[in-house]
Amino acid sequence: MPPNTNEAASKAIIAFENEQRRREEQRGKEEAVRKKQRERRDHASATAQAALEEAGREHDERVAKIEAERDALERKSEVENARWAKQKDKLETALRRASE
Image (cartoon, helix red, strand yellow):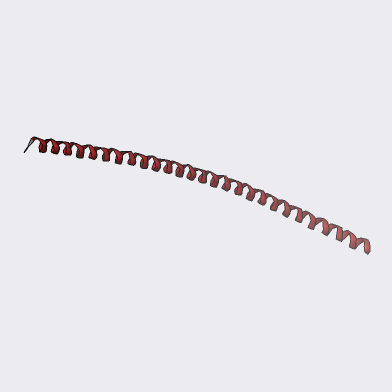
């Protein structure tokens, strides 16, 4: 081969290798960007999931407290109704006796 052909081939090989290296570096940079984005999404998702679980626990606690308060009020209501029934019966008996 003439010297110019070898020199041109060498330059072509070097240019090809440089371009391959550049493309590999570019792919590496793009993959790093995708990885960082994936990590951000995963972190945001984990944060949102934790917030949802915490809010769910708080809700369950509030509902349990409301139900306990409702049960206590129901018992108070039953006690008051029993007291009233007894008092009413007593007063009605007194009214009948007074009318006789």
